[in-house]
Image 1 (cartoon, rainbow over the protein chains, first blue to last red):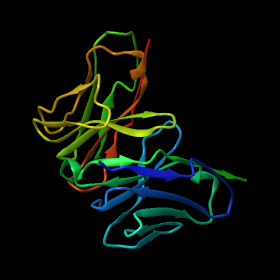
Image 2 (cartoon, rainbow over the protein chains, first blue to last red):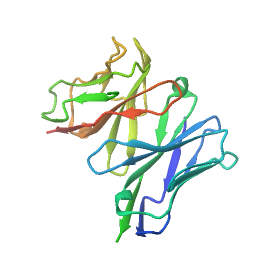
Image 3 (cartoon, rainbow over the protein chains, first blue to last red):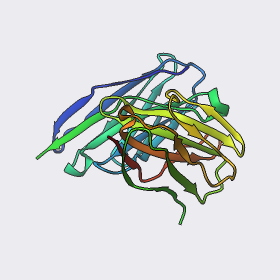
Length: 114
Length: 111
């Protein structure tokens, strides 16, 4: 089955700096890669996603890049703000389970310091 | 309002006492799933369902049961809870191939 690895597990940046979180996946058939943000005590919420036919997608300060050949994808947050502090999860959807099996990375605790 | 709901939100129980956590969605999604979240382990899938009466094991199904008798509901059943099932549980639903929407979570403590 699919295996998703995520790095780093913790990341501390100064407000205004950029943050980058990287994930690799194992199943070359995976075709959808969402990123979730989870604030303390709350549910994971989708912040951006990318499909396998696209190399990069941007939404304001957030961008995701995908390298299908290398089987890795990354989340980029620019001009970080204190409210960006949260746990971020990458995920990959593969063909198992009818195309809905979502395998998560283990998460990155991002802390934006003032 | 489109949403996934779970009940109860918090539950303290004792070893061996059967419990059910309910999950309901109002988005007519075919796909529903249960996850457990533990520190350092991320979100791990317990069971999922592709449609009514269709369920399958995820990555950590031991000690859990599910049923899908109606499209909107997907309860998680712990027939004989043990302390290692103490965790934060999330239900999620989705359209095929699309991202999943999560419920608010159920925090379970098994003594």
